[in-house]
Length: 313
Image (cartoon, rainbow, N blue to C red):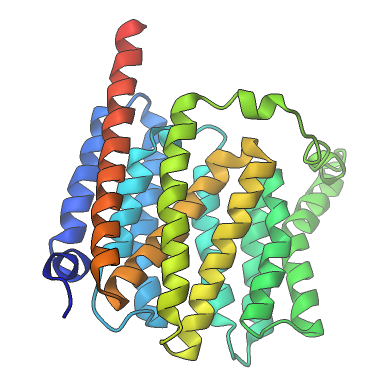
C-alpha cells in the first residue's frame, strides 16, 4: 500500500504552491542586486517547463508537480545561483530547449530537424559560456540512447552547433572586423589547481547536498524504471546520463559550477519526482524525509550565512 505522506507530497495540489511561496521568500529576503530578477525569471520559467515536459512525454501516469517543486526549492536555496554574473542563468533555459528537441527526436521521422535545433541551442549557449561546448559529446551519447544517431542526424547536429558561429563570422566580415570565432575558445582547455581552491566553502556544501540527493535519486530511478515502459526507461536513462556527465564535467572544470549545477538540479528533480510517484515503500519514505531535511538545512544555512556576511560587512 502506498505511503500516505509520500503520496500526498508527490501528487498533492499544494506541493507546488508551497514550494513557489518558499522560493519567492528566499529570493526576496536575499535580494542584493536588481539583476537577480533575471535568474529568478529563468528559474520560474524552467519550473513551468518541467510540468510541460512531464505532460509531453508522460513520464509518470499520475498528475504530479513534485519535480517542479523540488527544482524551485533547490534552485532558490543555492544562493550563488541568484547572481546574474556573465549570464550563466541563460544556459539552463537553452539546455532545456536542447533537451526537449532531443527527446522529440525519439523514433521521429523529423529527427534531423530536432537534432539540428538541439545542437543549435547548445551552440548559442556556448556563446555565453564557451566551456559549455564540452557538452556536445553528451548530446551524441543521448542521441544513441534515443536511437536517433545516424550519419544524417550527426551532420545535422554539427551544422546546428556551428550555425551561431557562422552568423557571427559573417557579421564580422561584413563589418570589416577581426573574426571573433578564432579566439572564442582560446582558454577552454586551461586547467589550474586554483580553480578548486577558489570555490567558496558555502558553494561546496550546497553542491554536496544537491549531489547526495541526485545520486540516490538516479540509482533509485533506474531500479524503478525496470518495470516501466520501454520509452520511459530510455528517458530515465537519458536523465541519468546527463546528470552523470555534467557532474563529471564540474569535477574536471569547477569553474563551470554556476553554469552546470542548475542542469544537475533539473535532472535531480525529474528523477526524484519519478521515483517518488512510481515507487512506494519504507526506503522511499525515509529518502523523502531525509531529502526534505537536507534541503531545509541547506536553505537555512545559506540564508544565515548570507545575513551573517552582510552584518560583518
